[in-house]
Length: 388
Ligand SMILES: [Zn+2]
Image 1 (cartoon, helix red, strand yellow):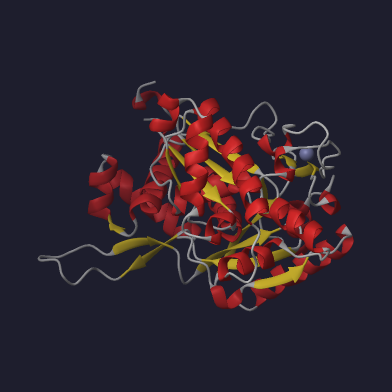
Image 2 (cartoon, rainbow, N blue to C red; image 1 turned 90 degrees about the vertical axis):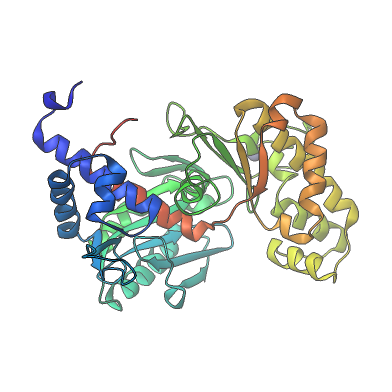
């Protein structure tokens, strides 16, 4: 379709989206920079910038003082006058965080609480924390992102089944937060949100084909293929954690036995070590003690390495990613652990696919994943994307 066939309103929205994405990828820019980077005419860019300033997504900063001539003011994603909130729902603990539109988390405002077993209590705690955060800031809250585990119908915004957090089964935390605050709230399945965060803020910036394996609580997988986040028919794609690898193995939170996530995650490692010691230790405590050398568990660590390598080789064989990012505490046990898992992965993956895939740790967190979920939503709401 030629641009002249597109309605002017639609074209303006597409330009708004393009300008927003440009600032997300490149950081603060002047109007002249934006015109050059987007290849769109200066008047059209100026109108889009005006729309974005009105919506609160952008702010005008000072002009750089090291440029000759009359440099234009720099445009940046809102840092002072607007904020977004992120809510991480997880087994163990939940977090509520505030961030500027460029993804910088306001660490001093972070709230963490133990995850209650009943949804009523969880809804109350997250609503109270979010309302406090909105009330205590002078910035306008533009939206709330929620990262939550399990199968999530992102169209209906309802969690259908969460093997590791049954309290949220059939619940709609985004609707509940909207009812409590009147602020737009959007929920994403945690691995998909983490994948989005890596692309916006982490080690997958600018990548079109990559995979992110989350091995912290459950085993989650997010895949970008051809620049699009793989969703499947209902948004449930990527549940690698519930593939059976040991038919007579341990009972999984999903009701099956011997799922990959009962063998290849931080939680699985903590459970194996806890069983041997006869003492319940959390994944965080186990990882920290192994890292400090206070705990020795070579057999359990090796068993998790083997299954993690099976998970990684499966992802490499299935999706041919250019990069595979690993999120979780496991790689922080020691400097040698990731290279060890990579060697094991090499033995199990198809050589051409393995050789073309770079494996590294993820740079973002579930907190940033929740922020990425709402930033992505606001970006999509700004206008349709201009296809390459
Ligand atoms: Zn399972």
